Length: 175
Image (cartoon, rainbow, N blue to C red; front, top):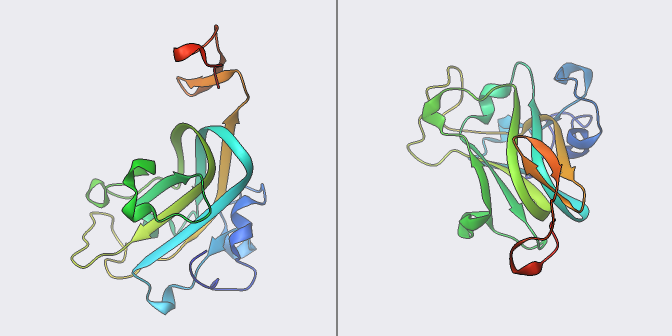
């Protein structure tokens, strides 16, 4: 996580502990300290190995999800990675002018990756139609990130992992 937690119990690891409770007061969420007045915030996870990630389930705090407006999700394959200079790894962008994000979002990834990063920025001139979202500062307010993978020999189709019927383009195995 790019910033210290607002409370020692709200560390980055809370986002991957398996509990989907969205109540931050019960210490189930990763929350960075917004009082540091950050105009950018990130949270990332490095997987044990590359996986065919079908989708992500992101659970924001039930009463803090507005702070996520304008966020982006990227995948990456090396631990040294600057997503803002390498936009080809962009998986999802929440347009700040489209309103607030949902408190639970399923984001299709459908690619083999070793890592996932959530980024939220407040550049100069940032505006949002999400009521009560700060236009100046951001923080991490993530209760859970579920990384849903398809096993080898399957791919994502209509939100489900489907067994490959044969081989893929150039006679490579389906993954």
